[in-house]
Image 1 (tube, rainbow over the protein chains, first blue to last red):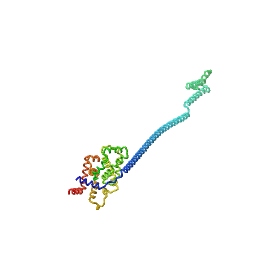
Image 2: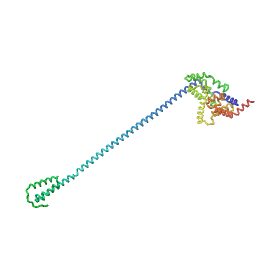
Image 3: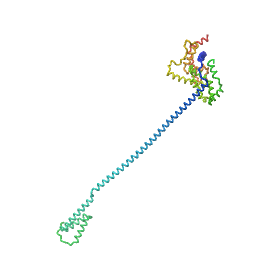
Length: 189
Length: 204
């Protein structure tokens, strides 16, 4: 049965005839041309791929360079911002100090405008001492009350020992001691 | 060229192994003459094998060129582990598979499925019984799945033994036996009338 099948197949194959094939030289030429075309295509594709890789690599490098530049600029901006903040803070401090000094100067001016209480007191003391000296002079020269006058001069000296009127009071007492004793009209005290 | 087996012998054996080795070495060195000689020696057999594998397709130029291009490109990688003929057969079968796949994809797009694998032929009334039988046989072989058609063609049209078929088809022995058996069964089933008719005639 296998032989019958073989026979059938071989008969059918033989009846189908031979396929047309080009001459060997032509076929070899065609193959060589296809081979060279394929080589050229492969080379071109390789070059294209290389070019694409180069372009992509260039783009990546460019992006990286740009990124680095951006990072550097951002750092510079941050530094500048920091310096600006420091400068602004410094200027603010200077302004605050200046304002403080101005405020101090104004305070000093205002303070200077206020009269010196010690001077005032001194003037009052001086005036009191003078008044007491005047009263003593009045007792001594107008009313001729020598004892009361002496007592009044001594009170001036006692109360205002450093005052110039105390010195005057001392001089008056000295004058009174040098004068001959005269009769006094009376003693007030 | 009495039959397929005779064809295979007459065309496949013109170059003995020593001359073949020298030819391959010359072709590997890029000698154009050596390659032309290979083409000259094997082009018809490759075309015939391609035609058989593709269902007796007369248009096998592309496949033959692809095979020769593959030989031209890879001849330096041929290490004489098998004969040049077996190597060429293996390449041809692989190229036929690729060609079938491409054709199938192309046809699926442009040709209705029922028109596929139909042999153009003369009108039925003008055909003789023998022509009708041969057409039916070719149609039956063409209708086999490629994995069954390949071993059937190699066995029945080239008379190859199992070791050479294993070398060419690059499959395991069990797979080859199964494919061959199923292909044979399918053919017997499809050609039952013709097979029995022949047996009857031979018996009578």
